Amino acid sequence: MQEMVIDCDRALLVMVHAHVSLKDTLAAVRTTSGECAAVILPCCNWYNKLVHPTAGVKPDEDYEDMAVVSPQRNVRVFASLPCGVSEARRTSGDSGGGGGDTGAVCDPCPA
Picture 1 (cartoon, helix red, strand yellow):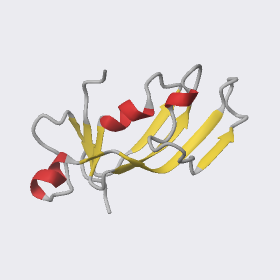
Picture 2 (cartoon, one colour; picture 1 turned 90 degrees about the vertical axis):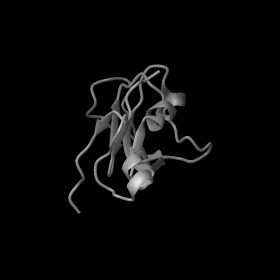
Picture 3 (tube, helix red, strand yellow; picture 1 turned 180 degrees about the vertical axis):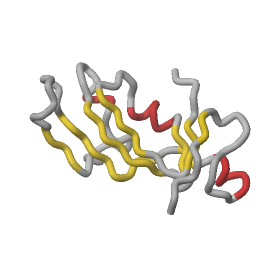
Picture 4 (cartoon, rainbow, N blue to C red; picture 1 turned 30 degrees about the vertical axis):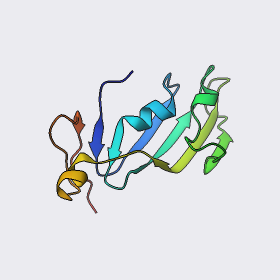
């Protein structure tokens, strides 16, 4: 189980050979919109755990990248995945930063 929570304006998850499920990762991310994007290169026995949390929803892109020097070269791209809503947005309506015990806090992204 992961202890850290990322609380920021926007998030792009990049999961290369990640030995953690997408569901667990999304539970640890909070953004202003409650959505984030992801680029995922699943490996080993993690193919079934790195899928959209809503059953049956396919990635926006799903392809083999022949430039990846590994037998596991499948790339999945999700433009929008559900995650938590930023603590700052819930408490003050402010989309910047975070507060309290939310773990790592990102600076607001420029518009």
